[in-house]
Length: 164
Image (cartoon, rainbow, N blue to C red; front, side, top):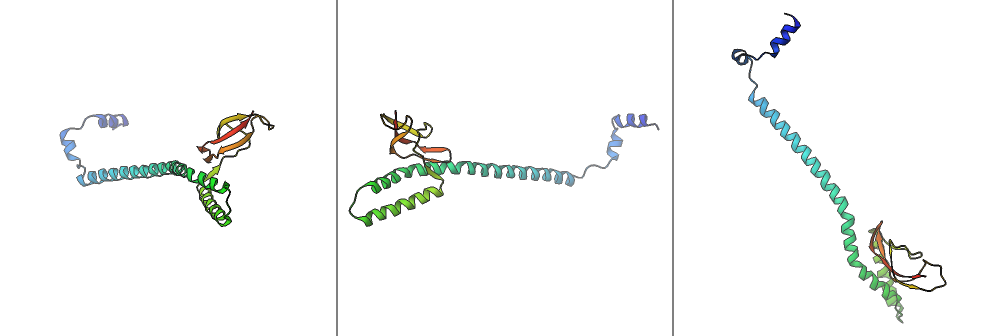
């Protein structure tokens, strides 16, 4: 038989007798293949789930930290005011200073930084007043309320007076 005849014979539909003569696929083999496919799909789905949740967790951590720290900023403001208040009891002032230093140490661990207040930057400062000053225009004259940020995210803008 020539090669063309063999190819033509393969393309012809098989008769019933020929189809019955071939051994049927074992149902156990089919079940094993089906279960293997299902197992591989479940493993891939679990791996994708694990990666997605890890990514969501790393994205949410800074946001949650920022929300919590923002709630503590009024406490920090009160500690700063307590340090600026005149008192005759030096031990009291020293105690407040220790609490403030401890609080700021915790803020540093969380990545919170005070906004610098030399030159006015609208990205991190809020000008609440402009005054005539012997300083050059755009310099910050005084700070009403300190601003804080974590990385590039501003938690609270610094409220400042700017020289005209």
